[in-house]
Length: 116
Image 1 (tube, helix red, strand yellow):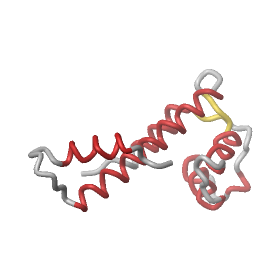
Image 2: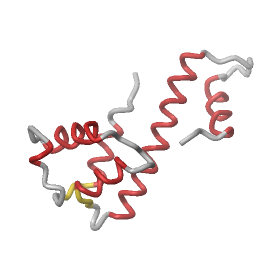
Image 3: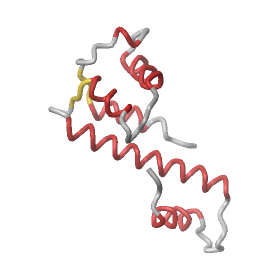
């Protein structure tokens, strides 16, 4: 998913508070990356909520969404996420019908983007 021109211009205006026409390239890269991550996060949240029943989705559905064309997570990356999140030693032990709370999962992702 690409950033729109409006999103880039908004980002530049945030980084160039003095309106000098120049921004620190490292800051631009950092914040453009974060912008992209938040867009993906928002899209993932919407897809999970659309499927959720009482705020819950199955692990199998989460796995399907993460590996879909929208996100293209490699199988081993999804396995790592799920085994870590569910506290199991290997992915073969994961019950794909197990349900997880959408908001708890999204909060765990959100905590990964915080920058200091």
